[in-house]
Length: 488
Image: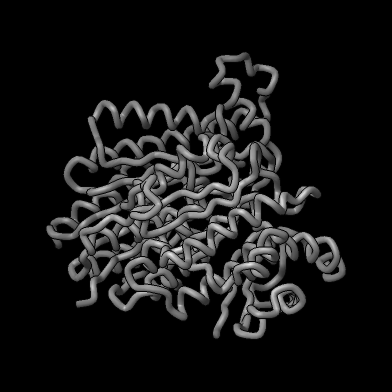
């Protein structure tokens, strides 16, 4: 009998809305109950709460498990959580829907996630309040100084003070809602993840984290995970839901390219890599094993020895011997009937093209069960762990293979290669820029599609000849992310 999972995404972007759909389509055993994209918001425009509430209450009665983004529920999405002016009473009333879900369906398993708000160290209002365009870097600096108990009077003046007050007051409201969500974790929420979005060692986000940890300790909660991440968390909890439905935990063996990679602190994060991986795997409902023979999944981790550079600035020295050794272990894992998942995070914001070319030559990209290299380390980790979990139950399918190819077009070719090229060489001629790519499916999306096809044909012809890139969309009308659709 098909099990139904109610899913409320963090926002409408592909990583949060479409990836979960594609995950569930890898198996015929589950059905995803997800709100229509038409009722969800768009970037800074929040979701229609009344319609979202109706969707949740109409569907929770027939669901076996619910995975709910509290940021979506309270604020209408991740960006609205950073710019809203909602009061505590309104937010608390919205949070109370979790109790109503349990009243309607006492047997439902409820998994939730709620972010600690980020504080970027640069000035841009693209995803922040308008005043962040001018004062973002200073606000971040003030937070760092407050955390370090340093004098910040030199950063403060009459012009910035009202904006700083607005920013701090919103953070206080969001932190209060995290604490109220924690209080529901004793009786209502079965498992809760509190991700740290774009973390740094010091500042407002880290101070909030300390308060959250104190609250968890005071409430004596043991069903909480708190670690770096954001856009992959919906997938992580879907993995946990699938394990729960099957009353099972998959065993995952970690294969690092370099032993020293375990200790690096990935870009935009604040914990050593191995520590974060442990949190991801526990949150997904799986277990790490040191016994290769018992492993269901071998997670291959393509990270550098001691740092994580931007994909647009690749290193000149390629460690071909290390690449070959890890690829050789992939071949063995495949022969041993293991699920092969590759987290391609030698670089942040894009995959390692030289590595993947060699892998295709020696192993064949088609033999990978799951691949991801998008954005941050945690984004890719959560994606590969979730898809590998589903595949370990249902086996490979056309849908899972298509998802791998979509990640190659997006994570590997677009993010690591074509994004910078198109921004610098093509957008100026159109009067466009990184933060303005025109229409969602306009001239830029056609240019991106054509350039991706051209590069794939020239460099990975075996993939190009078997799969078709049908469409490219620019979800937030900017160049940071794309939505790709591939068919076989």
